[in-house]
Image 1 (spheres, one colour):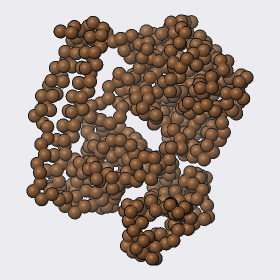
Image 2 (image 1 turned 120 degrees about the vertical axis):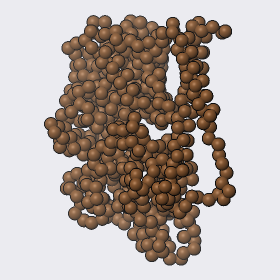
Image 3 (image 1 turned 180 degrees about the vertical axis):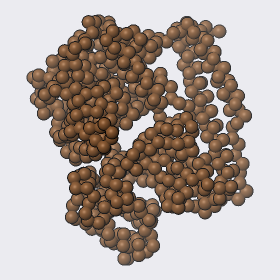
Image 4 (image 1 turned 180 degrees about the horizontal axis):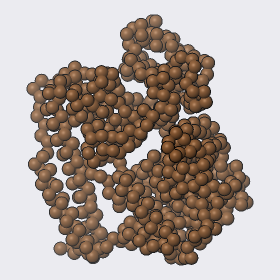
Length: 613
């Protein structure tokens, strides 16, 4: 890290003191001894962190800040940028063990260990700098690695934060992990993440430590790869016009055709194929337009004729950023392998039909993953079994049927409709379920009762204070150096993005805590989980505990507040919060049943399986 004194902005001072930006502005006006700016701009001044801390402490305004937060504030204030500072700190943790000098980095390493300290720094950096890179969510990365299968040598030519290579390390037990990243700082951080993961893998029984190499650079402009890896995983940049169309016009990688200037994704597809050994597999996360744009039809046709493109899998909306699109997974295999099919076929899968669990945030990834992998393995069997055909979900299509003027590979255009002979019976069952759900809802709609003297139900206490007293534990993914398995009664709190706190049930128990979520594990002798989740969900509570200094609001869980009540006094609130959660789940299920009924009636009328009567 740099030897220059760390600086902090007004937003950072507000976080230190646990107040809003307006309070910092008031202090500057009302207190002549408030530290003077040492940098920044007139509209966004920067102050010496040490001077600010002394002033806050002298005036009794310095909130108790955990060592991890103090470390992050120091790194974030580094004039070179947080990325460089995190990379320096991480390299010191990995190369020389715990830092010799005292300070926030040494305190955090002493508190949670070197590996967990590095995980904390990397996770916090990636969470707060989402504009600088496009993340691949862990569930999507794990699915891509599982589709690719095992391989000794794995490459990601646009590796970003290293999510895909980390997933490959967990799934394939490779000997080498190789990445290329345009941003040199991001390349350093990716190398740190993979090196730390490799060290952890070597400590597992029977595990081995893969060799890690991450180079900064432009993979497309660097020229043809050597063609010696078993697996390529890639989440390429989308819609890039300046990818090298003119200077790479005669590149030997374009054996399936020169991609158009607007088809950068097809350049990455051919780059991945060129990097593979014969029979090697590549899985790329692609925008849906790449399957149907007219400018790419010749390249798509060549990929089909040669048998290089094996599957196009449409993920549900929200599976990966940009979350407004239903992205595709392309599974490719370099021709020349030992078991090529005599008649090339393309597997198309539409995961949009995989239902979301009622009343839950996000996708049902276990079901989605099982659907995709079972279908792919059935298709990729030596005999190419027709078992991969599932009406409305998947089909194995002869390539000859796809080679028309459009070469449109969007799965939804080719999947046969679901079996409509039982359509009326299915819709009748849905209708019956909906009526039953609506009937239950009618009798359970909560009715508000106004308080005679509106006021909060007691003095407030923060989650951080409750954690220090032992009334609950705050758990984060990777925060203790090992995966965190959730339990019934835990309170799951989203830290970044949509979602609300909720109490986990026995159906959730055993699952691994995933980022960006936090887990509150309460002591049942002091706290009721429904009481905790209910008050944490209050709009004002989340607003005062959130930071809005980055592209997305990030929740500081330890600043959330609860009423300080005895366990017996918590019970009435807990029972009401539980009833509200059950009502919300029923409401979500009724909404899903209603959507299914309406869409089914539209389809039935259009297909003639139900009559207008």
